[in-house]
Amino acid sequence: MVMSKSGWEKRVEAYKKWGFSENEITAAFGKFPNFMTRSLDKITGVMDFFINEMGLDYSFVLRAPGLVSYSLEKRIKPRSLVYKKLLESGLISKGKSSRLASMCKCAEKDFLKRYVLYYDEIAPELVDMYQKELLAISKSN
Image 1 (cartoon, rainbow, N blue to C red):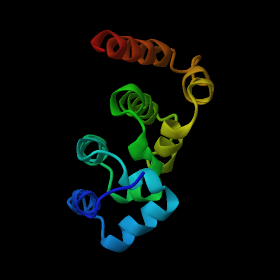
Image 2 (cartoon, one colour; image 1 turned 90 degrees about the horizontal axis):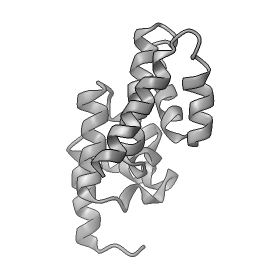
Image 3 (tube, helix red, strand yellow; image 1 turned 90 degrees about the vertical axis):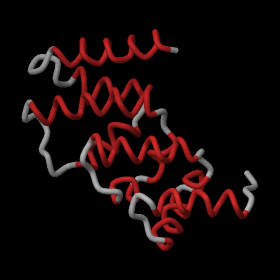
């Protein structure tokens, strides 16, 4: 994708608003070039969710820049809900925000196997909670 200089600069400013330095933006772009091709609304939505709703630092996205490519409503939010439930239940440790990145990145089949069905006996509500979240999303589209 070819991007105008002004488009690039707008995206740099969007990331800077969340705490990124120019060097960090360049590093993230080097890891995942599509980091700079997302719309300004997409960048803002994903960053706002991880920082303000999940309480994470911008460096969470810096370490996994591909996160900006996933659907906030269809992938990130439902999987974050499972992540929060696993944390609250003490089934995963709080210091592992990298686990959330892994949860967002993996294929649906793997996500279900590793994080929802794996804990089914201990936390059977995960399956229902996740299915309800996905159903609500599909109804809103």
